[in-house]
Length: 228
Image 1 (cartoon, rainbow, N blue to C red):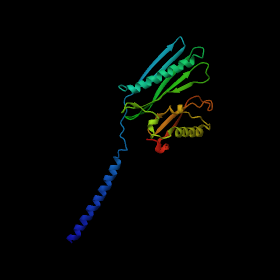
Image 2: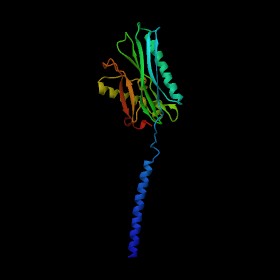
Image 3: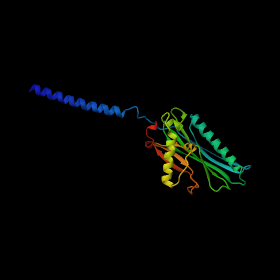
Image 4: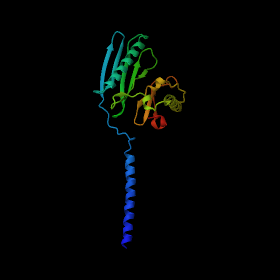
């Protein structure tokens, strides 16, 4: 009888040990280093200014983001802003009259400890031009490393990500609007980073009779092994 009880106890101990091992394995998988812990991003402040130039006859109305003690991000925003204003001023010199307006607002797409992604859209209203003109100077930034995030840095080294993205965008545009678009490398630079997607912006006018830019998402799940 004692021998039977001893064997029963040993069996229970072995069963308990197996369950414990299974639980430990599951917990170990859940704590896998592949799952990166992400925290909220830095505080983003809005800065705005207006300017009226009576010589060239234009008005600026700008809002843009800034992050305290993140000069790499701020410098990128300022550089883009300067480039956008210079391009606008150069463009309007070919037209006569008053009422030329450049407006710009930004949208914070994502803001975590690993990615602050900002969509900065510039809109030109120029008398003599049939439609509004649009430009994008988006900024993607890693607050942890304090470096800008390039599109190429999101992909495995040597991956042919540009043709892949061009094909994905062409498919989405063709499906949505039934036009055959020409996707350039410049179009790929309009990207912002969402939680599980990349988003790109493109003006399709006059093929699509709406001058406003269109947004197209490429999900991370569509990019397979080429994405880091």
